[in-house]
Amino acid sequence: MSMKLKLWFRETRPQFLLLSVMLVLVGTAVALHDGYFDWLKFVLTLLGLLLAHLSVNVLNDYFDYKSGIDFETQKTPFSGGSGILTDGLLKPESVYKFGVGCLAIALLIGIYLTLISGWQLLPPIILGGLITYFYTSYLTRWPIGEFSAGLGMGTLPVLGTYFIQTGSYSLEAFVVSLPPGFLTANLLLLNEFPDAEPDKKGGRRNLVITLGRRKASRLYAALMAMTYLCIVVGVVAKLMPAVTLIALASIAFAAIAVSKAFKHHDNLQQSIPALRANVITVLGTDALLALAYITA
Image 1 (cartoon, one colour):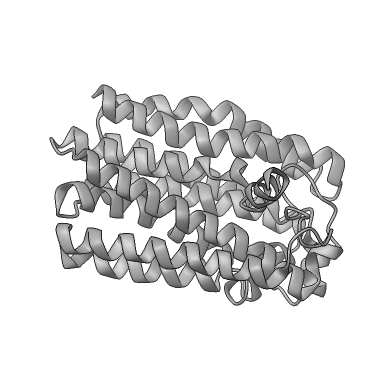
Image 2 (cartoon, one colour):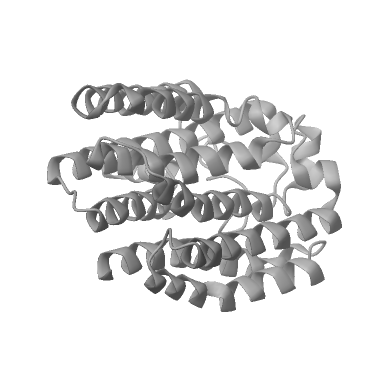
């Protein structure tokens, strides 16, 4: 039983779930800055988003196993799947049911939060649910997968969390939600570099395949620039407190990621430092935005 639980735990790819925590913290921190905070809503929001994130991880593993992609990928700490299904350690049907079950529970939590917070929460809940289920099976087959991921695991969670706490949306919350959206899109974009060939064989048409690695690395740099530009513009326009400029501290890691992406986009082993710096940039920037609003 202990070994089985460890396998299921690995299948969820828990090392990536910290992103959901950061997104909920950002949305909650902005609401707290506006004078709103409810512990129960915070816990339910965090639980719901973690379940949705867990679901997309598990379903990604299942669909990549079914398409054969994960049999071709070279695994890194940041890409290539969990390896659980390709090693025959769990039944694919059980993994699929688990992923769908987690999504169903997340949607039930979302419906409850809609009932107590307002019907305006329903559109992002539905859109987020659709992105979660169809991300791997459909959205990655068009060059919109990265931006749908940025929307579903970046912008929408921050906006939704803010609405759950306050009962309304605001221009400030929207502006704050943009950097996490760009960062999550970039997280997926750079992680696709090592898997471009297997992804193409499996029928995907993501931006790395569509543009090629060199042009995709330029897009990666542009999205990174947009992330920090949003923060600066938000402060200059007085939509965000000046203290949020501390989020620019992550530029040091972003510069490493961009530089290595340009230099080593065709070399798997030498691209791993870029993938690592990318993760630090994403989580670090989100964490600093949350900290800035709590401090403010």
